[in-house]
Amino acid sequence: MIKMPVVHRLLGNGCLRIWVILLFMSMTLFIPVSLFAQKDTVYVQDYFQSQKEGTLNSAIETALHAGTLSNTVFMLSPYGLYILNETIATPAGETLEIIAPKPGVTQETAPPMIAWTSSDVPYKRHNFNIAGEVKMKNVWLFYASMDSARQQLSFRVGDSAAVQGGRCEFENVIFDYSATPQTASGAVEIYARRFQGSFKNCYFRNCADDHFRYYGRALSFPFMSQDLHADSVVFENCTFANIGYVYMQEGGEYSDFVKVNHCTFLNVAMFTLQSGWWRTMSVTNSIFVNTYMYGRFLWEGDFSGTITVVPVESFEFAVPFTDQDRRILFANNSYFIEPWLSNWMATSPHAQELISQNRIEDVPVPQPMLNPTTQALFDSVAFPFMNSANLFDSTYPGFINPPTDTTLLKNWLYHKWNDGADAPWAWKPENSFQRLWPLKENLAYTNDTLLTAGMGGFPLGDLYHWFPERYVEWDAQRGNENTRIAHWRDIGYDSIFTAIGEVQIQPTQFGLSQNYPNPFNPTTKIDYSLADKGRVSLKVFDLLGREIITLVEGTRPAGEHTVTFEAGELASGIYIYQLRSGQFVESKKFLIIK
Image 1 (cartoon, helix red, strand yellow):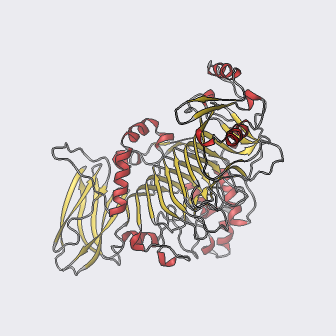
Image 2 (spheres, helix red, strand yellow):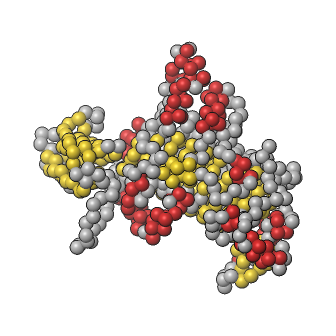
Image 3 (cartoon, helix red, strand yellow):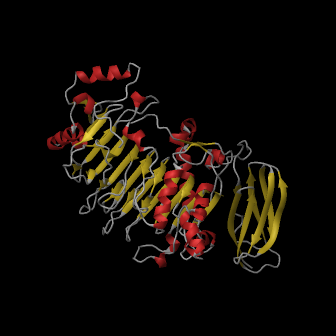
C-alpha cells in the first residue's frame, strides 16, 4: 500500500526550511497580519508546525464566527501539509481566499498540499462546500486521506437555492487524484444557478477512476441535478492528464460561455468537452493527445476526439437561442492518437475475440478529430459564426516525459471494453503521496510545427507548466490575443490589422484567409500563408465534395500568397475552398451570387 508521510517529510539541504521553522516558532496556530487596507492575512500553520490536524478548518471557522471571512486572506506555508478534519463550508455572500507563495523548483518550495484526515469520521463528501465565492492560488488539492485512501470528494461551488453566488477563481492549483465523488460530479462541482468559473494555470492530474470510464472529471454538474446553470467557464494554460472527462454538462444544464485557450489534454477516457450544447465557445491554441481513449464503435455515431457541436433542434430541452445566435470557434488546435492506443483497440484480446466472432462493428476504433455533424456545421455557410481553422490532425507533439503508463492503461481499457472490472490507471500516484516536487512529468514537446502553430507563433498547449519562458512572452501580449479570439469568434473571421508603415515579417505559421469580397461575382481573392517552403494544393469543391477546380498545385516558397479566382460559368451557391500543405489542412466557404 502507498503510505502517506504522516510523521516524516522530505528534508532539503538548504536553509529555507530552517527559516520557515524559526518564523513559525514565534507564531501561534494562526496569526492575523494586515497586508492591505482592505484585507488581513492570516498565516496558517500546517500539520508539521502545529502537530495538529484541522488548522485550516480552525482558522476559517474563527474568521467566519468573527464576521471577517470576506476580509481575510489565508496564507499557507511552502511545502506545508494541511489535513482537513471536516468539510470547510462557507455561506452564500461570503468570499474565501486561500493563497501560498509561488512554488519554486526545489522540494522546500513545493506548493502546500490540502488532504483529508485518515479518520473514518467525519463523513467525507466535500473537501470544500462554498456557497458564495472562492479564490485559491498556488495550492495542491489532494483528494486522498492520510491512510493512503482515495476519497470520493468534490469541491462544491455554489448554493442551488441562491440566485447569486457560485463563483470560483483558481490559479496555479493542482487538482490531484480525484475519482468519482459521492455527488457524481467532478473534482470541482457546479452547484449554482449562475456559476462562474475561472481556471488559470491549473493542472488536473490522475483524476482516473478505477471503475467508471465516465467519471473522474475536472468540472461537472452533479448527476440528476436540476435548475443549475453556468454563466461562464474559462480554462487558460491548464493541463488535463489521465482523466475521465474534462467538462461535463448534465441533463440540460449547460454553460452560456466557455473558453479554452492554450490547454494540453492527454489520456482522456471519454469526452474532453461534453455535451454539444454550446452557445458561445472558443477552443484555441490547444493540444489533444489520446482523447476519448475508449473509442467509438461502427454501430454508433461519432462523438469527436476534441469537441462536439450539435444543432439546437436536437437538444432535448428548451434554450433561449437558435443556431444563428451561436458563436463557436475551434482554431489552432492539434489532435493525435498514439500508435500504442490505436493498435490496442485493434489487437487486444477483447478485439481478437470479437473478430473471431465476426463482430467487427463492436471493435473500438479511434474517434475523429471532429465528427461529421460538427464538421458540417463549421463548413456550412448557413452558420457563419461557427468556424474551425488552422487544425493539425494526426500530428504528434513528441512529449518529453508524458505521465503515461501504457501497461496500466491497456489493462484498464481491456476491462472497460470487456467485463467492466476495476483496474487502476493513475500514473505514479505514490509521487503525490510523497509530495515529490518538482513534478516528474514533462509535457514540453519537440514537434517543430506545433512549437509555432499557436496564434502569434507561440507553441500550442499549456505554456505555464511546460514552456515557462515562452509563457512570460505570451502573458505580455495576452490581452491582444484574447481580443483577437473574441473578435474572430463573434464576427466569424480572423481579422488582423497592420498599421501603415509597419514592417512585414515572414509568417511563422500556415494559414488560409477568408476570401474577399464575399459574396462575389465574378472574381474574388484568396490569401494564404506558408511558414515553410513546400508542396501546396488549393482546390475548390462543391457541397457534395466534388472537386471543381485546382487553383494551386505545386511547390511554393514560404511567405504570403494571393490567388485570384474567377467564378466563370459556375452557378450561384455555396462552395468550399481547401488548402493543403504537409500536415496542414484548412477549409473555408464562399458564396457566388449571380
